[in-house]
Length: 174
Image (cartoon, rainbow, N blue to C red):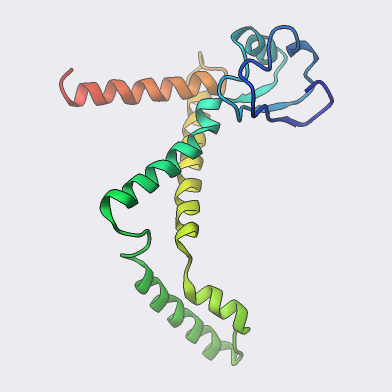
């Protein structure tokens, strides 16, 4: 952990970055793949030195999101893409035909088949995950830009989370 890295990804042990070793960490970015890999004291030292930390509650969200997708699929008994797949295939056929007519050339068979298929279930899951993770990052970055008291991604993530909880409580009258 104390070698000169651009990115450090602690992904196994809780509290592996602590007050004893934080001063020796040379990475410019820490991406917390494990749950709680950075102690409070270590985080304060790292942030003081300008090291950016992407917090575990954001980085680990991908697994939770995909588990949710799986749960939704299982309770509905509807595979991802069922409502969209045939429409997408027809659209891709039309695009392929128009391009071939306009250019006078045929798509190579392997490219044509991949394009016409329009994406597998795993492609749809990955697309949904990417969208959710990008949106979550964008929200954290926006909080960092617009809230002067928020100076790190963990605080931004907690502010967003607590705001959502408060809004949910207000919506049900609590």
